[in-house]
Image (spheres, helix red, strand yellow):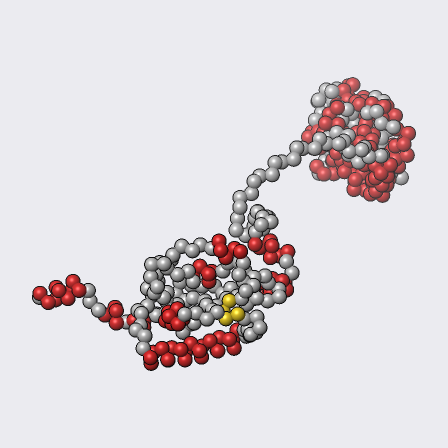
Length: 421
């Protein structure tokens, strides 16, 4: 009998509770002696109170509470808790401890897990827990066995079987003790944890991936009509084949330059063209009709000359026979209105002489600038009547600022008004 068994008689316990407490005290004294691995040390004085509390829990008399046991043990709360867990581990602290703890095989069958592949890991985790603390005995505590199964399977599978609290409630476990064992395994058994993680990765790699299911292709969205914009190149309509730009792009550069050289000079309402006709080159064909022909049409009403640009003498007599074609007869011969751009000058000997000299000098300058060389063999000169030649010479352009006097003159009606005043 234990040397401090007499202390149980001073706790006013029932006879049944007292007898069970004495047997537990004897067992605890033997299993916590020095060298057993579960030494209590200075906390041995609290052993009778702890055994009385455990006996009261087993019989469910509630005559000896945890708080009463802590006061009767004469230990601090922390020391009492440590001594209580050690005694509970060696003799069992609840009625469930007297019952058979389910094996790993039955637990694996319950959750439909292959226990043969996990059995080595269960044994390794159990040995590690006993080396850490002797209280973690899976043969006596169901919390330890279920905690080992839950921890090993979670890392081996790669995911938790279910939440910890829900798992403890389903198996009627103390969640506090169950969570303590799980935390101890995760903190102390790092080597075993890494091994289980590697096993999970290798198992996932060996499982063939399922072929992706073909998804139904969504219908293609209708392309919206783009609004035309100035900067968008793609929105511009292609040029028609009859457009001049397209024809110019398809022609050689040399041909285009040749045609540009042979084109007549443009005319303006205030200044007429200074050359008589277009110079024919081997690269160009004679034009059937030119703007010059329509300009030179004379009015049948009057024989007066049409005004022409200043100091320009139209070489009406100089015509190439190659220009004359059948289409010339089809030209519009309707009379044009007389152009009264300048005042007619009375013919005088001095004026005619000076104008003739100026016209001759300007003709020679224009021939030098334009580089026009007419061969006598090809040029057929037609001699016109002197009056016609003189009328052509007198047709000249008079700018507005040359006739400034006409703007200073007054109307006859204004003269009459001024005279009356």
